[in-house]
Image 1 (cartoon, rainbow, N blue to C red):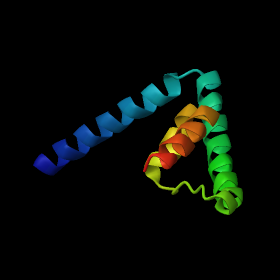
Image 2 (image 1 turned 180 degrees about the vertical axis):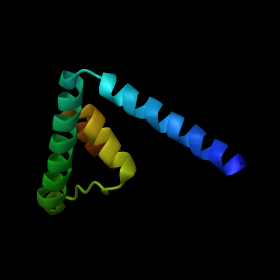
Image 3 (image 1 turned 30 degrees about the horizontal axis):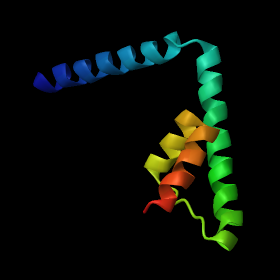
Length: 85
């Protein structure tokens, strides 16, 4: 009986999360998607061409989130932070 309640609670949470995601305006979702794609491309380009001058940004979940949420300024921020490590 308790398993049924646990499944019901998780289903309710999943419905709330999906409803919240669908409530976002499409414009914000598209902007976030464009920033994510642009950020990943810029990190790739920095890692490809920056090797010659000693710049490398490790690609992990933190750098992907920074580049995805902030876009181009996020990648610039990651490059600046890379000089201080």
